[in-house]
Length: 350
Image (cartoon, rainbow, N blue to C red; front, side, top):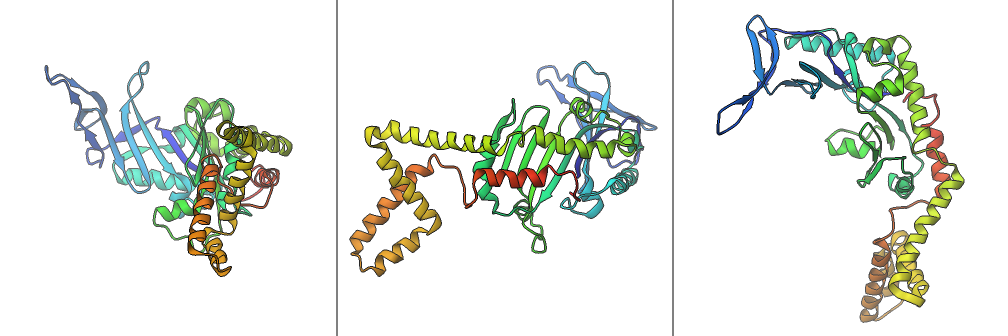
């Protein structure tokens, strides 16, 4: 369930032997005046700079001045719970595993000369996730995702990723195995996986959504709250529609495609629309090379085959400009009901 946690350390000590790196302050060329801040203090003195940081394979620690209106320096630690428990962030970690991951990170901080109690830290970001095994290829759902807009949020599609975001939270859906392969990870033993991530990006959002911000509250009833709110958040965002409403949204997409042809071709627009739709479907489900082979087997002249293929490609291109990616025999409503059922059920390991 939990993936990334970003914590603000409440109390911490940095030893003189710490592995922290201090980034020097910037300065004004004309005067040489430095823009620096006291970052931390130990027996060796006070260390100044623009920030201090320590990045490892499993976590990132940054000490930097707090935003305007706040005094002092903040120490922010970010890490993936399952990655620190399993070595990979594919599988979900339970409450006990989450606590074990925190203790592991805390021990590694000590090894690098930073001493703190992570259960006393404040949570400034929580990412939750759920993996599902889809019944169709990921691309089959992309036109559905394009219709499901969260309120007061910006929507951006990235091929194998669908993101709905505003300044305080994000809802992200992507092909998990494709993401792993892009990072050089082995996926041959894993089933096709669609990953749904919800990211509460700010401390205020964490408090509003879950009712707490301190790490130790996560292990005193907070873990179950996060699990329940994870489902509720998806129900209130991408899955707030009925299946019937999704069908209506799909008809609006088709209406936009028809309108574009109407504006371009005038009174004969539907003839061109049918031609393009037919070419699009033929190229997608049969394949252009299959069409070419069939024409050649009918003893068609080479020039006729070339002209036919050119007509097919031009007609297909007319619609591809407008058409969202698809590839399923299921209706939008059926695809929607499948995902809503799998993502919004409370039970399940992920």
